Amino acid sequence: MINFNPYGTIEDTVARLRELVGSKVVLVAVSGGVDSATIATMLLRAKIQTRCIFIDTGFMRTNESREAIALLKRNNIDAQLISAQERFYPALSHVSNPIEKRLVFRKTYFQIIETYLRNDHITLLAQGSQSKSDILKRNYHNVCDNEYINSNITKIEPLVGLSKPEIRNMAKTLNLTDELAERPPFPGPGLLIRFGGEYTPQKLDIIRDATEIVETFSRENSAEFVECFQIFPYLCSESMVTFINQKSQTDLGSIILIRAVMLKDGSYKPFILSAPLFQKLTDALMQINGIARVCLDMTPKNGTIDKARHGATIEYE
Ligand code: XMP
Image: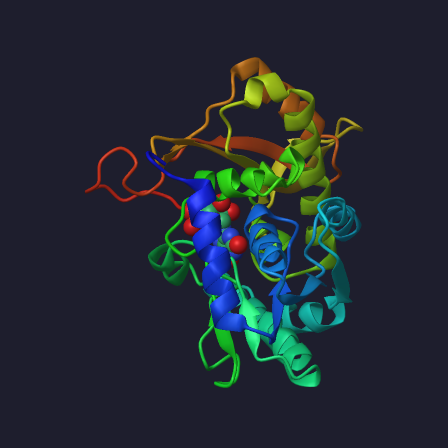
């Protein structure tokens, strides 16, 4: 972020957007995250006719749709809620391969966007994509080509090439609240990629509860998480392990992994919770029915320690 000038970047982007869009209407699928909110705000600042939709995929966290729409509203972004659970659940209920899960999610996501664009005769779609190479490698939910949307649609991606800290800096310069500018990242496919194997309502319930516990815990212990960029639980697939349940019987249950990372000098490193902190978090998670064990993942991300060594992505899928 050395020498990054948020004012200049915003001014240039706003001018470019004005020139590119003119009097047309632009659609932005907002998520409540900083990237899409920054784009929507720059479009509004450019006085461009901007339509914002929030797609509820069904893989959202507890109360996420309601809270994200309210947060956007507090930041002068009006988003229309599109409830699309009934599209996503059937499409994903028999898909267990992680790559396939992402592809089916992406296809469903763009089918919804395409229908919206077609019905409202909109030809411009603005997206918050950042680093092209990374998102292509990981089948990001918002990477699309003509396989997904028809060729009359023009995609606008003003944030390509910018880092997360730079976008947060722009968001603050645009007067977005800290709550929005500093919102921890959450992947577009949401809780779908936070449990192993195919979607079932039971797995979704468990990972939703676990996510709420982890996020509440990190908020309540914020002093200990200052350096943490992202922390979340992952529910391992079918494999059951033994544990002693609350009735002191031997039982079978699932494993939760905790992934926490920090962003230092432009690269991700594992964020290691202290033992007492992790014990407290484990106790809280063990209250969820069906959870047998909680494990901490300290695997470095690819290239973090030694460029030649392989490593793990942040997300599990
Ligand atoms: P990985 O797993 O690639 O994650 O090391 C890097 C960062 O990107 C987030 N992520 C996504 N964000 N759509 C998004 O908007 C996606 O499909 C997606 N997949 C991963 C991840 O949470 C982490 O912050």
